[in-house]
Length: 145
Image 1 (spheres, rainbow, N blue to C red):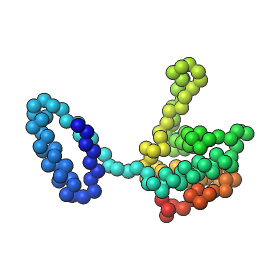
Image 2 (image 1 turned 120 degrees about the vertical axis):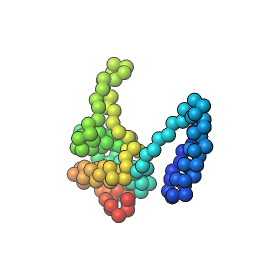
Image 3 (image 1 turned 135 degrees about the horizontal axis):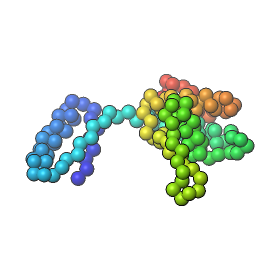
Image 4 (image 1 turned 45 degrees about the vertical axis):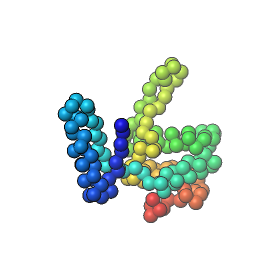
């Protein structure tokens, strides 16, 4: 059985402790219980909309070395370049099938609020340097996200 709890209040934390207390008997009987605790810091929905709007603007307006790229390719290119700029190097690994190389990097969906904001600012700077005219959600407005 898998249960996920997102705690927003003291009463929710107490309820979780009660559940854990009840399950400690199972642990005593040799049934392992895995507990993971993390702080929730996912990017906001507004940041998500803004990022995807920006990648759409890049895909419509920028030719990189004479080539137009899809939204997904722009997302990957921007993430890899941004990671290098903050010294969190993406890995370039020989492809498993022996055909070229693959890049392994952090996914944009794993960015927290702070890193998401930094990434949006980087994409905005890059797009501005390429003359991108940002659409409604692509205009840099930190109050929005």
